[in-house]
Amino acid sequence: MENSKHNVGAEVQSRRAASHFFERLARRLQSVDHMITIISEQQTIPRHGWRILIGGSLNSRS
Image (cartoon, rainbow, N blue to C red):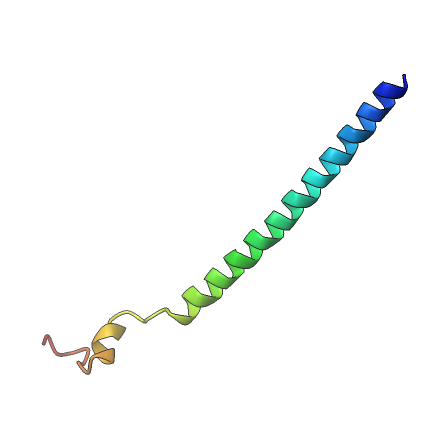
């Protein structure tokens, strides 16, 4: 009986540790996703923006 109680306690403790690990992993992945979203929004170039960046105009075909 004592051995079973110990095994159940160890299993519960193991599952708690795994749960905490996955919670931390989920928070890290959310922060990475947030950073990628911010960076992608900052680097967005409007349509035909590359022509403006290299000195061309929207009406010229050069």
